[in-house]
Length: 132
Ligand SMILES: [Zn+2]
Image 1 (cartoon, rainbow, N blue to C red):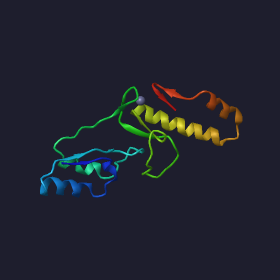
Image 2 (cartoon, protein in one colour):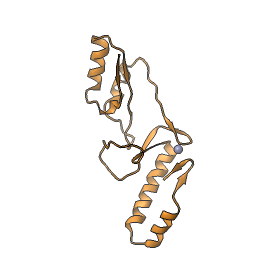
Image 3 (tube, protein in one colour):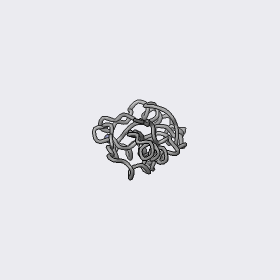
Image 4 (cartoon, rainbow, N blue to C red):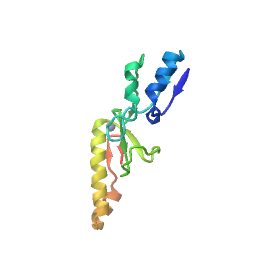
């Protein structure tokens, strides 16, 4: 048996899985993210769906099914290895509201208006069970 975690970072995932399963007779279990923080296909995880015997899509909970990943920073590189300090699993509604909160907070903090900056620091945003 071969188990692969963080499959989104494996460049030759399809070839690896095909060789291990078809040529070497191995059972291959793969875990990884199917999408990045911009809702795009992440790595080649989706390329192995056609050759999988079964597919189970797991999700966290944010009050709803948190199938998306919200990046809490302004970093724009696709691959940023980090944990909960940078990423948050969210549902579709919280993904959109989280992006809006990030943009609004950034605009306020970048402005010279100390009054609004103070307001945003005193009253953190909350959406359902998610805190921003
Ligand atoms: Zn949510």
